[in-house]
Length: 237
Ligand code: URA
Image 1: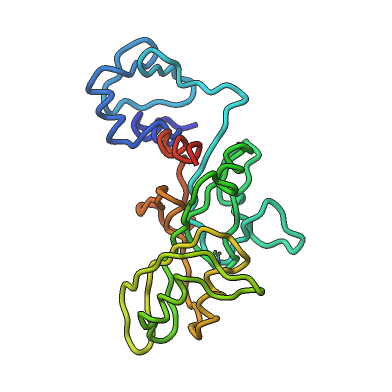
Image 2: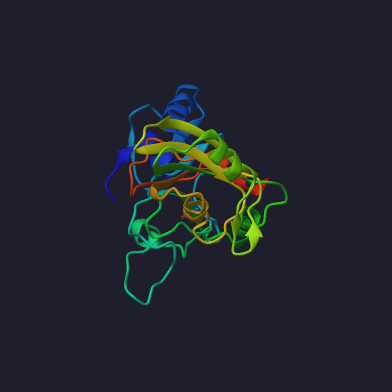
């Protein structure tokens, strides 16, 4: 493995942002092979790195967590009979990871992958209410009364949808863009809700799960480890 700058190396492990790591270095909290780390030093996994006196080496049972900005035409699954590209194919790890929940094949955006089954349950069956927020583009002008109807609930498969949140971002006679948040995860729910009021969804991207927001620096198809505080947040759900 090629040596990389220590701030990048530790950020890739999910310790914290590069800037926060630079601050730790300035504060003298990091050592490399027994010596105080200097900013810009290059390291690899053979180096003994300690933060506040604690080794960063992982033990075998360690859990991993990634935030992926899922592209379209990628399946939210760990295998597929039809050989389609999978979310797990986009992440380099030796761990057996799986996605928490699903995004449609044609939906982009925030998806969490992990080997931690407990956190999976927390996010899928939270104790409280967790709204998943989507950026939505639809055909036509969505009126405020239509938006209110969607927010109150519409009938899908003989069952009303739970209260939703929504805000129009821009609107022309041709199309409307919105942020729309739902707390359920029924099949193709956002697409079907808008279709039920006569607006076809032409683009759908998940931008947040509760307070966990898709990192805007992540290009479509790229990923990063979750930060400790983000994992703590998921654990608190
Ligand atoms: N709603 C949809 O229609 N599709 C998704 O992928 C997620 C929510």
